[in-house]
Structures are given as structure tokens and as C-alpha cells.
Amino acid sequence: MSSLDSAWALIDTWPVTASVAVVHKDGVDTHGDVSRQQRIASVSKPLSAYAALIAVEEGSISFDDAVGQTGCTVRHLLSHSGGYPFDGAQPVGRPGAKRIYSNTGFDMLASHIEQSTGIAFVEYIDDAVFAPLGMHNTALEGSCAKDVHSTVTDLVQFVHELRSPTLIARETFVEAVLPVFPELSGVVPGIGTFDPCPWGLGFELRGQKTPHWTGSHNSSSTFGHFGGIGTFMWVDPLADCACVMLAEKEFDEWGMEYWPAFNDAVLAAIGR
Image 1 (cartoon, rainbow, N blue to C red):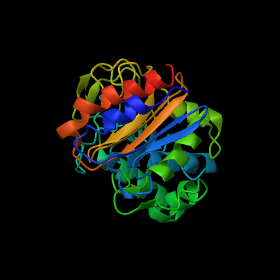
Image 2: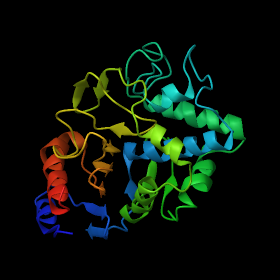
Image 3: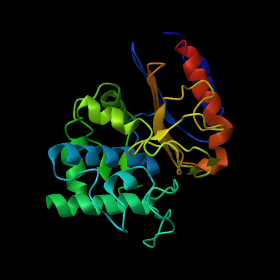
Image 4: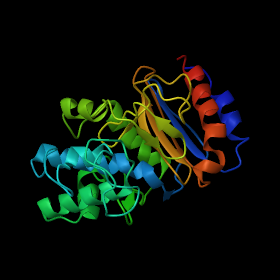
């Protein structure tokens, strides 16, 4: 393992106080107050999606369950292809026609799990994901699309799960981090339009997207998510490396200026 000092030095130039962890084959390196709790914005989505994957494996729901407008399924909602807007219950497109990033779709998913299990989603995600992974400082406090509160330390536990799944079958996990409806074009909010715009089941996939919030040297198989409040989490299977960063400054004020260079510095340090 090479020193991450150059990556940490970049953080010290950022216009915000950040908490960061890099997970690699030799362990975990951190910078800043990794026990600090905050709202993680849309990094909530992979956690909520994981609860949905567990519900599928339990048999409580299926990927093909109909939810919402005609033709829309759980699979569509998880992959932002259900035809629902960023916010709002009225569809703006047909299911499977375009990648339309949607908070609404995830809230619909949570409601479907509640109706199918008889368990409030706030309890379901805690029982299914947070508690078994030891994420004791993580809680859902509103919309499952954007209102999980957590710490870097807790999110590292989730990253460990993503690097070696224990809560779901390997086959289900692989399906979640490979492109779903791979031909769809769409928008990554705050970054741009891509054709195609690959997404998995709750995870954004880097693919060939340029520009992107991950590093230019992240592999196309990198998966994760960023949050508009100024948070991100990515896992690069080829580099055998992952990173979690929490801060509180709107993405559009600093993300694309600082994040890619930092992520490339991380990859350089671990020898990617």
C-alpha cells in the first residue's frame, strides 16, 4: 500500500470539512472525523436498494412486481427507468423508455415493501441492513431516497458488504451492480446526459461516462452513488478499492472541481 498522503493533502485544500475512508486489500485508511454523523442525501439510495434486494430474496417482493403506472415494476424503480420524475407522483415517461433519475421511484419502492411485509420501511431497513452490518449510528429519518443519516465508520461497514456480500446471494449482488436496461440514455443530475447511461439496481455504474464524479482512472465497473449535499461512495472491483466521503457543501458548488482529482489520487496511491 502506497501512502495516501497526497490524497489527504488534496482534501486539506477543499472548501469544506470532509470525513473520508479508503478501503483496500490491506485495510482501511481514514482522514477527518469519521464518527461525525450527517444526512447522506442520495447515498441513501444504495442502502435502500439493498433492503429491497433482501426483500426479494426473502420472497416478500419480486423484481417483476407491478408498482405504479402500467408496465412499471420494482426493477424499473430500482434502475430509475419507471418513468417518474425527480420529484412528483405524475409519470413523465413510459417504463423502460429512458433513464429518468427519480426520488419518487424510491419512495414508491419503500411503500411497496411496507405493503408487502406489513413492516414500516424505517424498521425494515434497520432490521435488514443497518443492524446486521453493525451500523449503529445510521438511521432513516424521512425519505428512503435521501434522508438516511450516517457516519463514515458505518458506511465502511456497508462497503465491506459490497466487497464481499453476506446478506444476499452473490448472484443477486452481481445483478445489482451490472447494467439494467443497458441501452437506456439519461441524465446524471448535476453532471450531464449520457447515451447510454448505465445504472444497476440502486447503484450508479461508471461505464464510459465522461465527465464523471469518480476519477478518470476508475474502471468502468466502478459502482456507487453521490449525494447532492456533498457525499459519495464508490467501489472499484478492478482496483480492489473503495472510498466513502461525507461533507456538507452542495455538489454543484464543488464536486466536479475537486472529487475526480482526489479519486485519481486514491487510485494512484493504491497502485491502480
